[in-house]
Amino acid sequence: MSANGKILVIGGGISGISAAADAAELGCEVVLVEKEPYLGGRVIRMNQYFPKLCPPTCGMEINVRRIRQNPRIKVYTLSEVEKISGQAGDYTVTIRVNPRYVTGKQPVTQAHLDAVATEVPNTFNYGMDKTKALFLPHDAAYPPLYVLKKDALTSEESQRLKNASPGGAIDLDMKDERIEVKVGAVIIATGWRPYDAVRLDNLGFGRCVNVITNVMMERLAALSGPTAGKLLRPSDGKEPAKVAFVQCAGSRDENHLPYCSAVCCMGSLKQARYVREKVADSKVTIFYIDIRTIGRFEKFYYDLLEDPNISFIKGKVAKITEDPVTRNPIVEAEEVIPGKKLSEQFDMVVLATGIVPSIMDSPIAGVNLTCDSDGFLVDSPNGGGIFGAGCVKRPLDVSRSVKDATAAVMKAIQIVRR
Image (cartoon, rainbow, N blue to C red; front, side, top):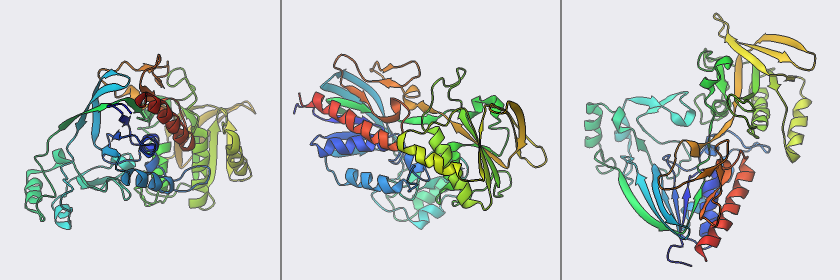
């Protein structure tokens, strides 16, 4: 192996964790960089995987153990890659480690927690609730360290934290740190973000309080979510007995995302099951252009077709407004098969927003990345040493993301072991 035989993995979601663990278990030194204060990405914020409907902690716990127990892997959370220079086999990487203000040298105690009263939006739950400015990101967070939002503190809270025991648990003077490492290859696994539903002006998100997105629905259904796993609509906290799912919210639309986001259909089918299981006698309507379920997932779809309380309407939703009294969303759509227009009230509407590659939001200085017309990463041509993994390359489910990560590792190893 060359002197620069390390592999850099950017992104600590399921693809990045899988890539880091695979590479380390094959004998490579790995540097794993994640911008959030915890590993797990979007997957750890889901309620269940499809098609088996098991919680994400099932697969994530195994992968975190692989990371934690392997001395070849160095993990930097709350960190970002600022710059990459050099060439395949010999890259110099600058990493900025942002301050957590929690040292990990001493435990955070109840005295520290009691010192802080200020609340901030809980980004783990997509802002649907709040958390204290000193918080553990989630119950299964790795690393299992608290995070402090220093800028949100009052001067009194800062002083109380300094006085809290034991000393050394909190460091309000912590600064950014820059680290330089040498690597032979880079795997970019920065994942995806949901399309901004506010831009879908006709679908009412942001104006109609009971119109939410699919990622928000996952947190509502999760036991660790803002409603402790109860499906409650935002306006009044009542169970939504009548729920609509709007497919292709932004996807397959030349004004927004021209491509199919691939996993949205399965996501909505899964969430339709959440509604039917959690709300007695509930009724679900799914508005779709095409139901796209690949291979073995067809069985999942066919099972839902047998449920008399789930209706499938082929047709594009044109507009969603809100009843000013009940706050019920009013869905206007065209039913393609009978050829008629529909206007119907629901208790809640879930928008199946599409997948946007996160690489579009965080370019890396010194690297001329190649992306396709939709913004998805294309592996470096002509023998380069930078490779993509997972949803940074195309929309993928968890299983396919893990396989794609393994493929990226195989390419990277060929670079570092020349």
